[in-house]
Amino acid sequence: AQSVTQLGSHVSVSEGALVLLRCNYSSSVPPYLFWYVQYPNQGLQLLLKYTSAATLVKGINGFEAEFKKSETSFHLTKPSAHMSDAAEYFCAVTGNNDMRFGAGTRLTVKP
Amino acid sequence: GAGVSQSPRYKVAKRGQDVALRCDPISGHVSLFWYQQALGQGPEFLTYFQNEAQLDKSGLPSDRFFAERPEGSVSTLKIQRTQQEDSAVYLCASGTSGRPDTQYFGPGTRLTVL
Image (cartoon, rainbow over all chains, first blue to last red):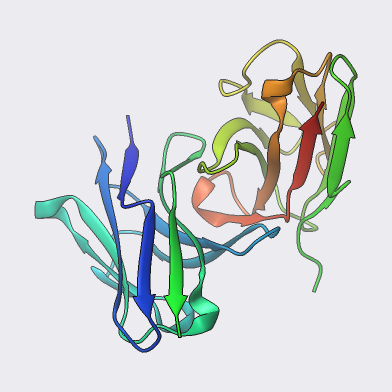
């Protein structure tokens, strides 16, 4: 069965610093992997997705993620954090008919 | 542009009451998904429709939960005899195909059961 694990429920960075949010997956088939962002009292917004094309995926708001099969990882990065990046981030993998989400990582950006 | 809308946005129910949560998907989207998101957790799959057919309801936690999409567009998630553990945000998503990788999410309905 497909699943994802997000390492670190809270990450805090300074404005302008590198953002790194970790996600490892488990899948018996080639996975489709996603990163979503959720702002307070809002739904999920797709940041980027990997669907077996290029392993380095660029998304919105300057985020990108690299699919590494050897490490079963799909970590999310952004070179320079902005205050507006503070939110909850979810990694996800497609199952048979659904999306399987990690528990989320709350990103705090300090001025 | 019109995205996925959900109503009500907030619902407070007394334990034992029945509630109905509505989802209006993006026009023309054939697939529709319901998820339950408990506080501090990621969304958990509840059920999936393709047009009016409910193809997967394996995530519904009990027989108190029922979902329908009779005309293949609007969907309603009904919870009977609500319990405190039903308190969560209920998210709806719709997609252009039967695959879950094309989902667009609504803002959710926050249900609080007292």
